[in-house]
Image (cartoon, rainbow, N blue to C red; front, side):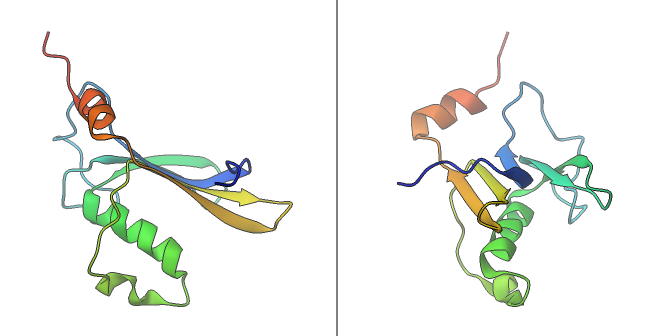
Amino acid sequence: MGRIPTGAVIWSLKRYTRNENLWDRVCFRCKQKTPIFEYEHRDEQERPAFGYLCEECAQKKLAEWLQCAESPDYVHLGYQTDFDTATVFYEQKNDGESLLLTRWSPEQRRRRLQFDEE
């Protein structure tokens, strides 16, 4: 394994784990489904911006980055990546981008996604 990237965050996806439901929110991208990921990115003025993405749109976002803009076949991918966080960093010293994916263990996921029932 290599080192963890340390550059500026271009965008990130984090599975939503707070003790509140997102049923009253809608996906930032498709504007149709209930989101399950928090989405952090930069707006046109390079300011941090936040939103929420559904599973399908989060998968598309990841596939877009993996395929790059010159290869728009991501829409036809027939598989999904099981992940809980995805972060793309820009590393100036390499003049490139790095992707860091995290997948929680089943026990971590159960604990993090469990809502307080008090």
